[in-house]
Image (cartoon, rainbow over all chains, first blue to last red; front, side):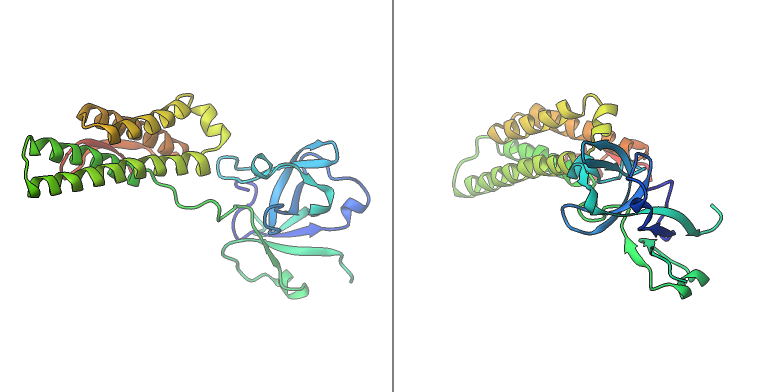
Length: 89
Length: 174
């Protein structure tokens, strides 16, 4: 997710914001990789019907919906709300 | 204070933070895919292509020699030529199929054609002993290597390999 986030960054992820609104394009979210279940960090690029097409901010190095397809709503666990470390960057 | 939130660390080196003391240990989340992304380098394909050239040279140097010993040796050269032509095709296919993304293909319009040529020339190099074909294979692999390093933002240079067949290959200028 370079340059937005780098290895070692610590983030707050809100699990309740999506109780008040639906995920939308531009949101950086934590979701389950549909192939492995592993938690990954991507940005929602667009909504396709009831699914979300996610992409990494570093497309040359990112494995994302271009490879594993748009993901359903229940694979998204929350939205990044704040980066608390490093504070200045 | 009840906080309905999860703290995550983007995988990598971390330093302590006061905040961490108030929450459950942060969970690691992956922004980079790690495996399946692996280590990619066209060098093995280049070595395989050089080997194909070298084997052709050794076969052709044998000339019309007959008898048990030359026959045995030529059989080995052919076996190695076959093996390395296939290895060359394999290495290029893996980088093209596993590493290359659509935007790399968009930035390098000749990428797909170059890969196809490697496949065809690799097969042709197995079927005959035309050194020109082996050199064309090496040329296509070198072209692929240049495009590969460009996707990594690494400049390249060309230099003669310091061993027979001493043909030029593309090196990353690291």
